[in-house]
Length: 182
Figure 1: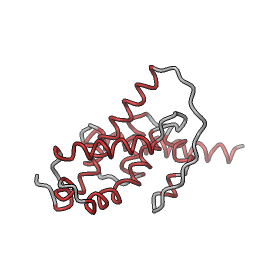
Figure 2 (figure 1 turned 180 degrees about the horizontal axis):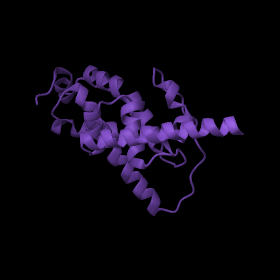
Figure 3 (figure 1 turned 60 degrees about the horizontal axis):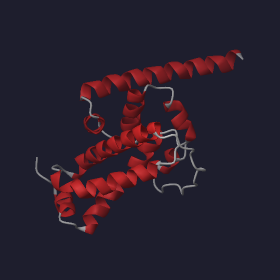
Figure 4 (figure 1 turned 180 degrees about the vertical axis):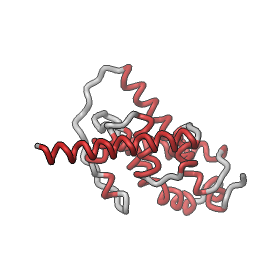
């Protein structure tokens, strides 16, 4: 696969090309990272996203593909950084600092970005199902891009998504029944 014009320009250091890639993926990346974390640690989704962008800038020379596939590649980098942060955090016994207030992201993702209810809903799923639903249904990656970002096969993504949505529908019916009976 050959690079498209935007990626080729980004590899050459073109600031406009990087802005284009950033606009296309930054908001979705932060939203997705927020769905993955409980938000109670010292490292925020924005910190991990920033590290992912720095890593992408350092390794863009090794990337081949188009601007559309760039999102899957970037999400994969962010997933690995988040896993490393989580492993480091579990080895260290530290007290988290007070939560810092972050300005909401502007754009269509902002309605979901501040929704603690989305994180609570996704917390009922297994980690794999949560990641798949967040990639496909929350931030809008294709099944193929979600598979690439998560290091799974497309079939595994479809199966995990199917199970997750079935569980969410069942839980919603049980909650509605509890409200009706109670």
